[in-house]
Image 1 (cartoon, rainbow over the protein chains, first blue to last red):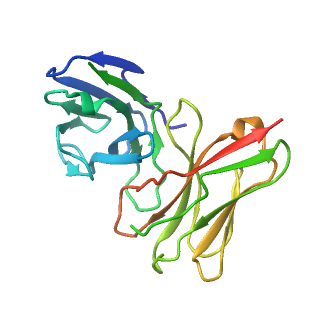
Image 2 (cartoon, rainbow over the protein chains, first blue to last red; image 1 turned 90 degrees about the vertical axis):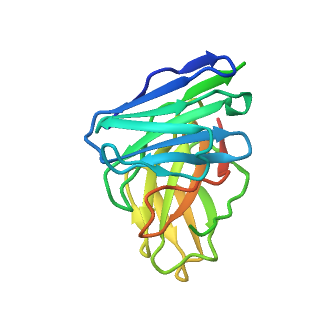
Length: 113
Length: 110
């Protein structure tokens, strides 16, 4: 089975801090994704990547950046955390192709104080 | 991606079949219909997908209307572990990402 591992289940940071969320997948998938999930808003795509060192903006990239230096690892960076970035963050990976299922991690619940 | 409409919530009794509807009246001819579910405290999980024909797998069946403007996810015998939020999503052939709506929250009663 595909395993997508997010580095932390819960994280508490302070306003203005630089925050790193890490995601690792073990199935050699080309695609990796970062979403955030908020009550009433569903999942919203922040960034995705088709390959190493490639990135594409999703629907809500403002305030975030990403890094993909190795195929198995996709990092989400909050350059200067703000309270409105308190949320559940979900990482996913998939093979390349429109009908390839996405495999999700269990999420990181991030609180910005 | 075209929009889908699902009921906010549904209830089912354990061991009975569940039919989860999804309307997608603006679907294009090449959009695929995908279903995911999200159990409490977990990330979403792939369930099934299809284009025109009905599809079956070990988790569920997908029934697609002839005009493709609606579809139904069928859980043949609901268990307590099937309690989750179920998402119906359309994907265009040139799309790599998903657009998740609010989904249907399914409660399964013992």
